[in-house]
Length: 264
Length: 260
Image 1 (cartoon, rainbow over the protein chains, first blue to last red):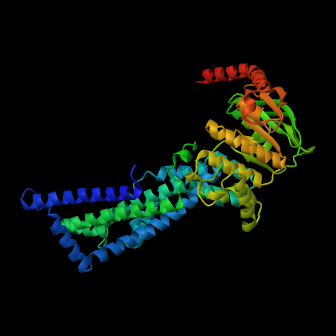
Image 2: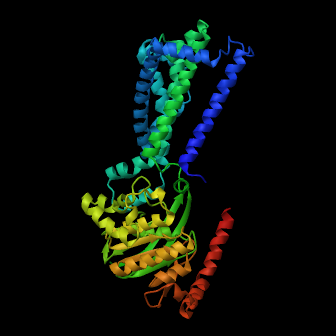
Image 3: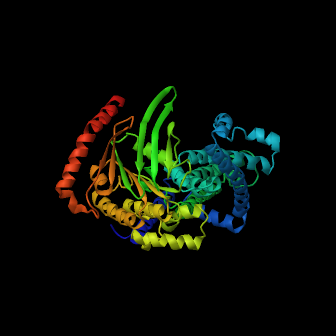
């Protein structure tokens, strides 16, 4: 075993080598005429387009509205999802009451009900935010509920034995104990909100990364299309990275074998 | 604190099927006594302990403390494993009982540090449990139980998941603290040697439904140590208990076969 510092540097180096290798081969193959530039413009051209769009404010214009939708949709869906999910995890009564509704509505693809949402909320921002929120809501709810229900019984015994009140039981045991699963829900919700926002913007938006990609396809500006995809990829990578860092800080015991093995 | 159990029964229902886990158990733990409950796995000894702790309600029978029914004294339980919260650092885990009772932070930290010293973990007070070994985590559980100043300590196979060496050390530490504090201890185990090493008396339980088969007094003088395991007295006791429990273990094993 080498020490972890060296190890990480080595990994990053390896990844950079692979990425630049692929881009290099792509560039060379493109310039040699092996790739049809209509489908596969060379990376250098894509990057030039990217920077010129960055310079003239086109990217920030699209990106800001997409992030706005994701932010509010995610927040509006995840927060109530976590709360209701936890209540369902705690109370059998509430769970039995709400579960049929959840089971019936959860499997509906959120894009499928988007037209209905437009009828209800109009074609402005509200219908989009609601669609994203719905996608996040169910994922947060289901995972939080599972999180509470999968808490190792021994934690409840400890809390009870040491005299925890109902409030203490919740804040000191149930909430932290279900955090790993709540986090899993948040991660899925964020991924879904990115997916849904692009889908929505394809069909019903003038601005946004999805709209940028769709418009690029309609006008056959292939480099812009790649730029849009590239931005989506960056968003995905960035959100995964941020969540992973947050997870390491907030639930550092997650994935530790000796603690997970005790879960029933 | 004197503990008395009278005609305790516990029946679990699973749909229409009833399973009697504990059958008419009566016994007494004297003030300051170290009482071991020994039985084959699945004999209901944890269920018994949970009833004593008030975590489970008996189907019938009574748990009486110092002659009073349902007075619910302060008891502290040390659980098999995983009883230490991974989301709290070591000292907050130890101070948990005090915190639940509203002891101010400085005061509970002060007391907790003292017990962390006793179990040799004061260096790790602000570390997280997942960074420590299983043996160290059970030490946290021990400190948490003792710092709570319970009238009675209930231990549910606390060393069951430890390797043999660590277990010996922890048994020794437990005896030291117990001697210092003179608390009544009810200690559940399936390990004969452990029961003899620790207990003043050993209750031997039958396989499920759990009954008391025999009560043995361990006359070996304290302080006890590993050396005594080769003494004639120890070996005789071990054989006596083994002969007593052997048929129960065999019964328990055939239960397992029936179910699988």
